[in-house]
Image (cartoon, rainbow, N blue to C red; front, side, top):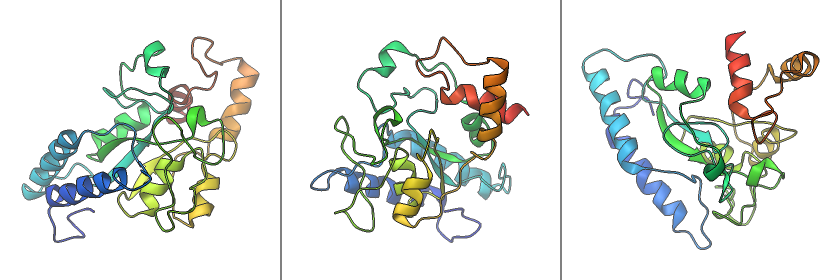
Length: 222
């Protein structure tokens, strides 16, 4: 979706993206890829990226790349609900997670919060609150989870990449279930978990001891 590799301008691609998201939302039964989505925000980001390319000043190789963010990763000003109906009421998002901030600074088009299994507590991706994301290649099948939305939106071709999280199968399950290519910044977590346990660095103020943005601070700073 980068205009260096496509004759279409990024703002034109954005319009097709918005139409595709609406189509997924209107399926019977609905198969929502995103929990939080603002078409005008996507248009604004795409217009800015298009202008940068027209002026010959893209921010990076990621400028104009469409990416979704799993709903347990902070992307200000959108709430991080963890696909619940209540998480945003007890935990306010005040800034981007570091991974999101860096993607934003590179010009990536953040299409916002991708669906997931509620609280990441399951491997099917089924969600009674917002609707279940379905395998885009076979709607009769579920996606696997908990990173159902990020994997499905990449497998559908609507996004080039997505951010997900893994608490024990949350990313590899939807990846191999849909036979999709799914790139995430997750490799350092195994060593990091040991480091956190040894140094007693769990965040006791978070609902989850290993809340995603807490992990990212350590991953990206090392």
